[in-house]
Length: 442
Image (tube, rainbow, N blue to C red; front, side):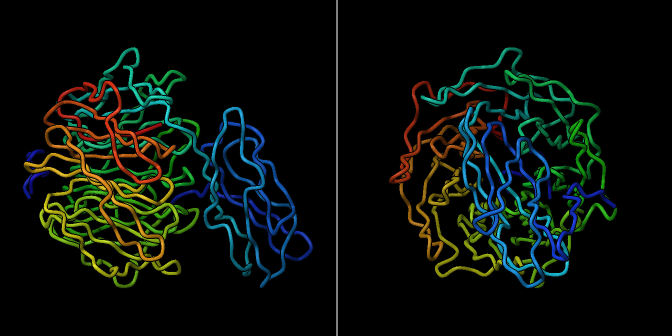
């Protein structure tokens, strides 16, 4: 229980989906766009019937499709000024007896800002990112004071407007508005969570906030007010999970939620009700992982999931059933590392997995992912600072960031997009506050 010991720990929503209309007796197709900043995005359904979303939020195609007919949403043209890459999830299927409102279009660009949660200093360090070199420059006013006690994790919403920070000791979630230059300002009073919140996540459609409460073995679910960034609990929240939940991840379409349970060595899996955010246990859940299941990652196609088992010194690998969300162990899983993984993440291309490893090795490793099988093959291992606890990848897929808790530093590595090999960027590591625990990229 290395990471827990470091922390001194023992042991009815309103949907924001599309309001659809019928025409011609059929059903319409639509969904939600997030992260859009450029202009010129054009979506296409069944190779026609274009739509040109100009802002984040709901969209819909005008042509209706009869029951039993196919739909296939694709990107016809990407946004420019700034240039962005948009991807479609939940984009194809067969029309049933209702409008389709669950298509998710996520737009990204290279990271602008990096936020580091400092649990020892009750603060958030903020940096601007040099897109060309990866170098970091502190933002004026950094570090910013947390509005809670012992901040341990954070996430930027898909639209890049708000930073959510879990405060482990004060049992709440701080909400900060992100300024044009990356500055942080409190958006309002912290959101009350369960006991000992440890991880936080916003769904891909930017509608719901999920918080893993390690102290009372629950997950809290909140609906987000898009205008303020604040959130209120949905009916039925919180939901019971296994012992000591430590991380959360959805599939890219926001259909399923996966929660690691540290004390059980398992992964709890839930289906998410579209437009409501409520959770239903998936048949077969929880799924066996390894001792000290601490961190979960899902590849960008929603095909594979990976879990870092800290105590077992392994990574478990699973295939995700696209119809049910159930997890099936891959051949060769779990992979023995010879070091204790604290954190895992998959790059935006789905080609590489990165693991932060502690104990005497203090290193970060990259692994290539075989597309057909999900198998992991080590690509590189490089030195890290003391007690590396969290690794994330820039939306461009060219940079990896590593929080070194006992060194009070943030390391930045370039990623070779051909081999997955890591190399420290000039000036790395960069100083942070006391005991950096988590990184969020905007």
